Image (cartoon, rainbow, N blue to C red; front, side):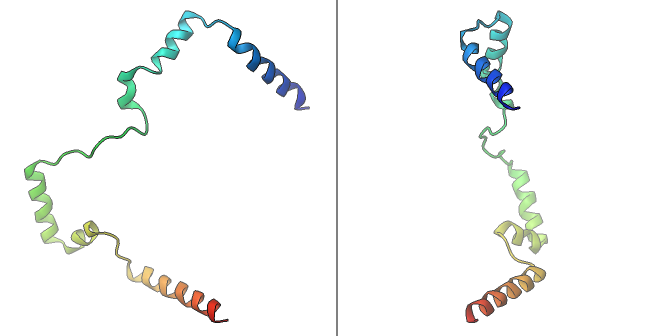
Length: 99
């Protein structure tokens, strides 16, 4: 059953390189490689947006007002619920090792 579609695909693959592309198809292919479209492509590498001095001062003031914001900025800190699950997981691993 799958032999006929696979054979057709193989024949089209072998015959396609010899076929001429129409001028419109060539233009469409070249348009997909247009360098001006590079900014719209996914996965592009851009640096972070620069912060102005007043934005930095506002962030510093917000960090002084809220210690939780400072904790978030400093990195990951598990919550009480996460500590509970970490302790349960550690206990299970310890029990498995001891048995």
